[in-house]
Length: 463
Ligand code: GDP
Ligand code: ZN
Image 1: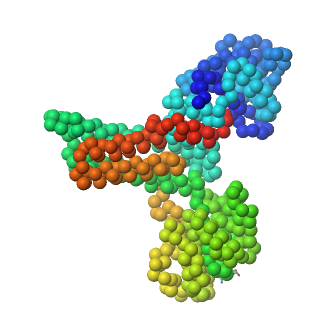
Image 2: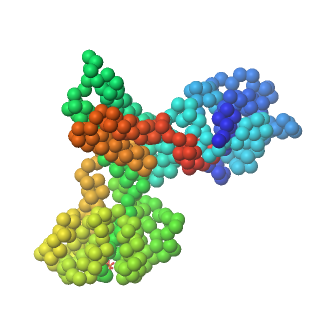
Image 3: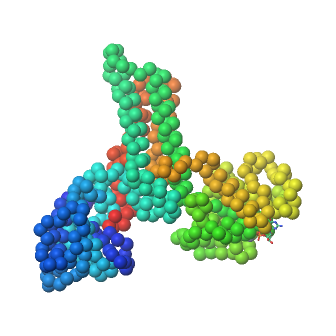
């Protein structure tokens, strides 16, 4: 384990050339260390760094007296700094050689190179932020769309933290009543009736469920959804792909780990990063199914969140369509695109098997541009399922948090079941305490060192 008493330093700006670069120093010695290297324009050693003022001057290498760079230095006094410790930032010119040189001098003066995420970890340990906020820092840095950045910024502001604190407090109150019940069953103190207890637990569980509903949306905004277009040859899949990409392609990424012939195109659909699965050939001529064979397309369908299943009005639903439908499981959300309506407008999918009739559907003629909008709208409806929460109320997208919420909701569920089965108070309190602890994992109050290390190791150095 790293020593949190050390004064640490790292280059905080991204590697590469930049107009400026920042070296961040944090800890008890931060001020002294930078003082030792800093010289004012008049050649004076600085005696007194005033908090929150930028000082202009030079960093000088004491061994030969040479000026290393012209800099601005900012001092953030503890506890009102990011880490909660004294922090000094040296803003130098942005070349890597200069930055490395200054960092070297800082280390020579007694600072230690920061571990990845150590600044943020210190902020957490010093109570400046909770764990959900620390994680929001990573999410914010990695955000790929405005919407995802907004979710992370809300979380960084402590909105999730606030909810978790309140819910844990409510659980503690219930626990206190239960303890009183267990310890002093006959005393004349306030007891919750069974109904009141059940009501409170139900309320708390509802609150957790509400958070979970929002989290689904947050996760979608952060990670996007993967959409695969399926259908037999010649139904209009390529036309659909091209139409969707035509004016919406925002980002083109090569997702590591995918084979070379398959890439994902990311388009920004109403703020949602939609990862459209594409193959090298899909846009030229051929279809996912026909080109890759059943096994390959099955693989892709496995990874799909939503499948756009295109059928042809002119041919109706035939055995080939049924073949593809067979590859879809109940896990998939399917949007049925009944295309080529211009050829047979009276076709409304009546020959679809009974069990597929519930799929949401759009009738299109993809030769018409408006119909692409219909697909986009239907896709968004499917993604949000009619419940779009205003973005300022979204602060939850991290899978770790979602899992903890799900677990806590399950624990409350089982406490309620125990109550309904007439189990004694001490039995219920096990699950309720469990839920309280589980929620503490989100804020970081009840997590072990291992998990902390794991979380902070995802950061890069300087964060
Ligand atoms: P894919 O094999 O499923 O990818 O189908 P394509 O997108 O390559 O389309 C096959 C043919 O159908 C092309 O000639 C398209 O122009 C045409 N097509 C696509 N959508 C429609 C439509 O809604 N109506 C009509 N009449 N033709 C369409
Ligand atoms: Zn095609």
